[in-house]
Image 1 (cartoon, rainbow, N blue to C red):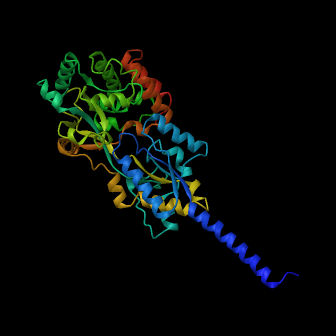
Image 2 (image 1 turned 90 degrees about the horizontal axis):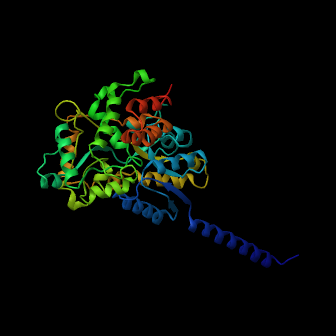
Length: 405
């Protein structure tokens, strides 16, 4: 039999080893994975990374961030990851739309999180309520979309801003003569804004919000809107390589003052240099028939932070992931992630665009992914080039039951 002192020494050594291993595990912390669209030219990208670093410093946890600029490729990649069971722990993604529908079974309702962690009192915004009546995401910012114009280019050419259709077409012709791209756009990468705004130019608010179940129910104004893309194309409104360029290149043309106009959202405003804020304005879409601009604009709350079931069901990661969700959605964090960089004439014009106008959600958000991609990535460039008629475009889209049976 071993002496008692040796047995005690061995026990102490074992205990020390266990404590060392436990301390090492605690020092390593928990490893989490995030995905968002706070990347690229978005001025909130740096703030997002800073918030993650602050969380790591405070908790000892590690965050692997895989954020990228929001486009169809990014969106499809996120959905494919969910389908393959490779979703992140915390996600910033679209909400209350056809895009969010495929992920709802793999994310946690905010009410369920609050029930387990009542001290957090995470906000539930009714604007992000899904069709099942539950709210899964916490929004970080609202948005609007409009017609951006480089006002200094209009002034240099002696042109009025495009507040009605005649002024828009006059500007297109003049800028084309001057060697300036009238409207910067990528027809094959992100033609979303163009598609939404030609509908605003032709449709009433009620028609824009229609959700037809058959081709016979499609508003005639939707067909007129697609034909308008062809009309703009033939008028030389777009760059010669508009059907072969990327959105990033199209946006750079506008930033560099080599393009006079661009359809885009508030995320573009927050990414523009501060010195350009007084030489850029955003306007509502001019009406195709009649004077003035549409009495509505595109806007809403499109994206929010989610906690995934994968993190929630993990004994190791749940607490850390909930803590990260709370960190990202604190009022101070949301302020840092908001559109605080917009100022000057750009801010004033954006406020004027929304004042007194009805806010409408984008038509594309109501479509399921396959139909939306066919409309935007196949039909729009084909209609622009003349390879497909406006009616054929909607016949193809409606054959896919874009808004459900």
